[in-house]
Length: 183
Length: 150
Image (cartoon, rainbow over all chains, first blue to last red; front, side, top):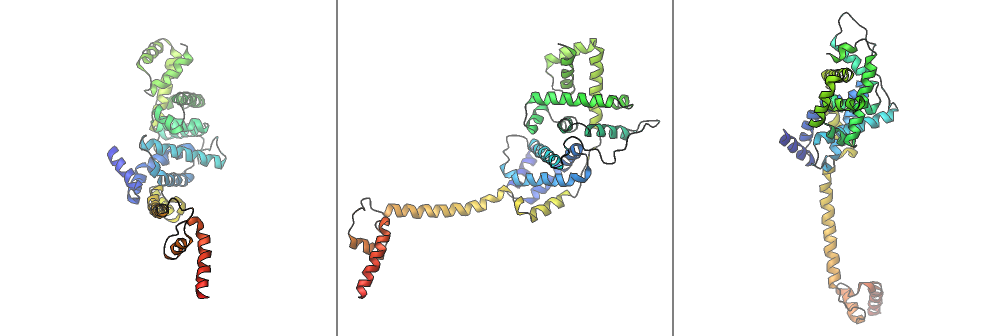
């Protein structure tokens, strides 16, 4: 898998659009997923994802294969999303589109719980939201997250700790809390 | 170590980022502290639930948009297009260096005082013996040719 990726990267560096198309196909879901989870509005995902991949295309010639390619892609994605949010001047929160309040039925559907979780993640400050996405959804290691965010591992640890505490405190107020963590 | 510190270790434990020595200390504490044990259960469960959130797949036709943008935007030219441009300029720079080097080697070292006639002949038939006197040579040449016609 790594060897195939290396060959694709070399193909892109040599100007092969075919290689770049395959690369886009391999990373599209991950990039779009991160964007959606941090930004929250699916209408903006395509525009931001396009911007991310154009940046990758433009700069892949300068990619030094000292770090993982995926880490490099994540870094570009996070920076592009943060730039977008700064431009939109909605750094703090963007509510989920069609985020209706969750009402309790006789039996809590999984989707209701996921909606509640998504809503509360979206209401976190963007720094906390980003790190929850990178760790709990994308499952990056602390070292990888530190490389993506260009910070120390200690910063990742403390930020993740505060983000989870914040999310836990918010969710504890919900009647679905017991169902959430026992899912 | 107090519960606040153990809480930080719980985060590292659920992320598999805890060193073995700290793990032993934490596991011992969790056996005797119900609050920390509850926090461990809640944080671990919460992480597990977050991981179950369905992935957002995105637009399967995203490549079409990207391809159009690459084709239509000169700004989106990749850095790996540089070698073509670079090769042309390397060739020009190399040619310039060779010519300049040739000129410098062709100039005799003690060219301060030279026979004007030699200079004139050089100006007519070949490379000036002293490029610094090119202007003077040109003027002299014009005078010389005019005198020939007079």
